[in-house]
Length: 168
Image (tube, rainbow, N blue to C red; front, side):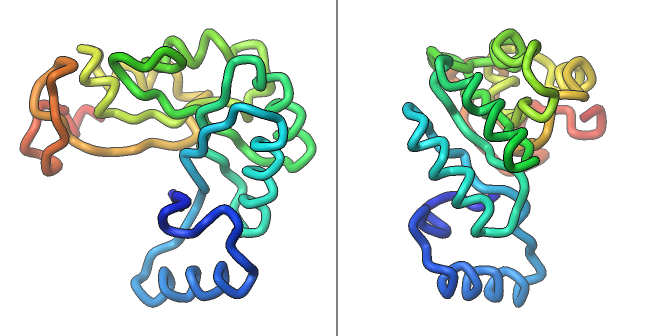
């Protein structure tokens, strides 16, 4: 997932080509952009245009609730997928996959979720069960391990925390 600290939102075509060349040299393929916060229609437009210029078809974002109907229009216009990133305990917008689903369930199925399994675990939920529950709407995953199943958990090396990766 290409974040703006990897490749700025206002990158030129030359910078984008150079970035993809660097990825290719390392055997890596950028498949999406984001997460990108969005508070206005202009910010959403900018994110979708950036995604198009980068040459991928998935925007991972964190939009304000009021923007969701507009995001749905952009998904249809560009024929892209849009994945809302859950951010765990303390996030007032999208702490869990349940909270994302409640906002997108009546929208085009291409408007879905980016499942951050670490944040799901920090909420005391089972990432494997959540993955199955929302499979149709999960368009991306952010993978990390967490030290404990609570808001006090911190990121750690895969396999050294509490996430059951074989089940996932």
